[in-house]
Image 1 (cartoon, rainbow, N blue to C red):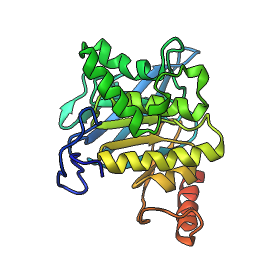
Image 2: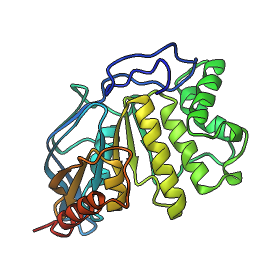
Image 3: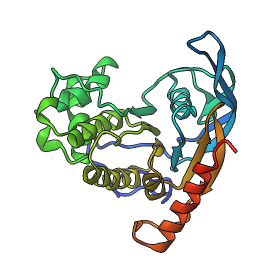
Length: 277
């Protein structure tokens, strides 16, 4: 636990927090109610990316979503991020309609989306600079975020000098520097090798537990969802909808080699294979 950080699962505050350390509030709930999203397909016919989707994301929860391509996972994430609005239905963030993107909604994409001409630290600072945060505070908060993801020593390196895993850590630090109440992650580890992926999963859980923010994490990897999630949303396509929500009772830290882990994997896999039925 980072000193001074309020953790909604613990319900208490520890000693004074070092200046600049990423923090969050105990909020971060999302209510998706009867949401549908209609797009025009390439042939001009209407296509429902999502149809009548309802979902509650609890404060401090780590919620994973899996499903085939075209099931609307990213569309749902984009609605929570404020990038797009539903055709019908509502999306509430901490009880209020989402009007657009904001610092309370941190987003990490599959692609690193780093500016190649900026150092790691300057990439992390960029959003704060656009919001008019003073230079000294930007530097302090950026370095605290890089320290949290284990990259303070690489603060002055450019993206081309970093490995794929390090670049994705910079992307996570860039999202955390705004002190979001929810972290929205769209297949963030899909582009890295298997060993790096496992390391990043463990580091993400550490950060989530230390800060206490809400996480909505999209993946195509069932093992990843079982390892990370408090609950797992299994989605189906044509139209995009929720097939099933699987509770994950496994205690943390989780062991992929345990029989209970394999049993839950099989349960989620069965739900995934049955999607659309």
